[in-house]
Length: 187
Image (cartoon, rainbow, N blue to C red; front, top):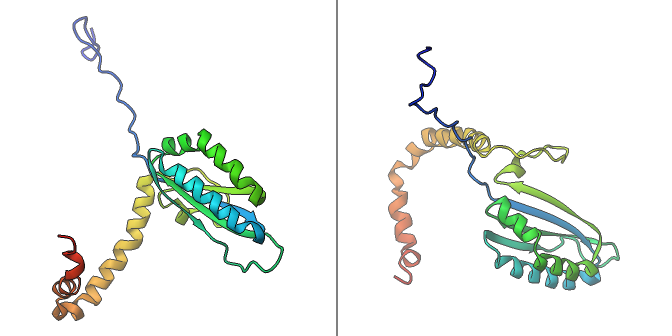
């Protein structure tokens, strides 16, 4: 009998569970065209939608970004809305909810054309393709490595060149003194 084969009294180890990657926060960027006369109604409906989203598990925040252009012409303005959830599952629960469907119906009369929706996880927006095409999500650890490779050399260079010039400034005690009222507020 082969020494590596199991005997009747031995049990084989179960296959190792696949490694799971930690969940990344998901941000949804929405762009809608809104006629100048409908901007106030659109923003009010979107604030209602944001308030409804706050009641959902994993909601990290949201914001209506008003249009940059002046509303003097009759051309539709580009309005943006940002939603963030802590996981894909929590975002999906919100997107499939009757509450969201209700608020979409309230938003629809104020908009022109279809919405443009872009999902971003973690720092994916920084790593998006220049042509704007959608690609599969990057692994969080790869994004972290690229981010670290961009930040570490910069910090190291500043530490080696500028830090010796600032050694006599005692910046941390000064900051603590300057920010004392804020640090000890409500204590």
